[in-house]
Amino acid sequence: MTRVKKGINALKRRRNILKQVKGYRFGRSKKEREARTALLHAGVHAFRGRRDKKNDFRRLWNIKINAAARPLGISYSALIGAFKKTGIALNRKMLADLAIERPGVFASIVQEAIK
Image 1 (cartoon, rainbow, N blue to C red):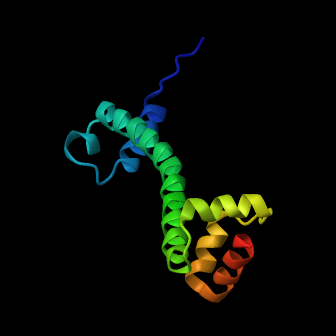
Image 2: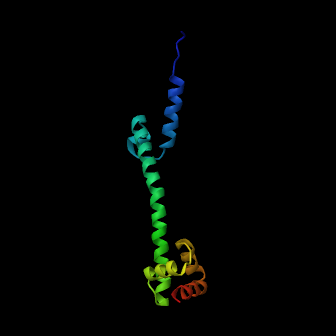
Image 3: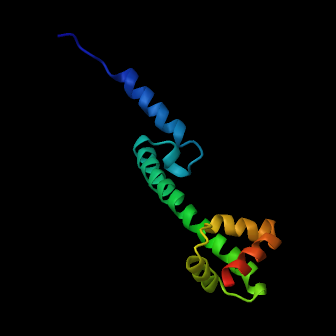
């Protein structure tokens, strides 16, 4: 059996990892082992961050809807309850967009839900 040297592949892998951690601080950008663990942790944080972003947007939509509904004489929770009772199926993203971009349309929807 012939001898197989893996130096080229190892160097490629090392270069690829160090390229990905360019800009990281301290040993994470220079040492292979630290760079690998830094990449693993970065991946975990990125995954969690993508989930958190969805929660952040939902909270923001709720705040926008509540801010637009208060001058119309109804709170956010009462408004959502009224939507469920009357069967108006608009998601919070659309409601928040209507509340900001088209307040007149939002007010008419709220009046329809209150009736």
